[in-house]
Image 1 (cartoon, one colour):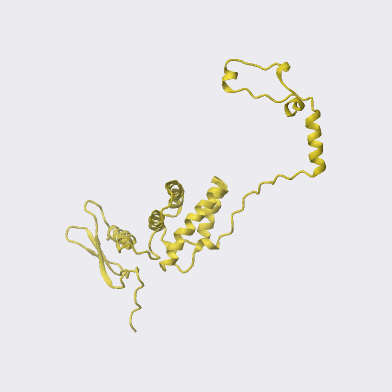
Image 2: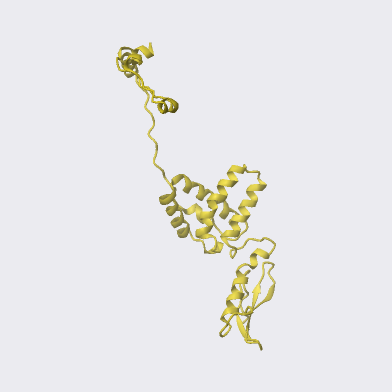
Length: 234
């Protein structure tokens, strides 16, 4: 029975071999972004103690993680979230977004990448995104949460467009609801008439707010030079 074909970006079994100088070499076959199988090899770095080739294998695995970045800028499921943000930023610049918008997006992206940047795109689940969004809502407020969600939506929209993932995980999140502001109620004719009548007959002194320079020199107002509300509105 033929051996199953490797998926794009997937590597086969890693073999280790000790070199004459005591270092190790780790080797495996990997299927690159163009669909072709190539042999990937990494050795133990000079000056590093390596028992049984574990360091050489870790070095090889790290190089395989970043290999997608070198593949003509293609985005796959193994691409990092950090690289996905780089692609979104490039597209925003190409679209001619305002400089202030770009600055705001870059500022918000730092928190996203700090939490999710080292994950591969295919590793990002709706549950992980929901946890991140809820933390932002608690610690930084609803408006910032909505900005972060907009950025994530754009990032993973790119991932879907490039077939790195089948669906956009950010679309499955529940909406973030902020507290609604109470709307001012309009006065009915009777209430408006009563308000105007009270203003015209009020003997309450008008409130006086002194400017900072007046307060600095100790200026005060006397009760004799303050008009009543009725006089002020006459």
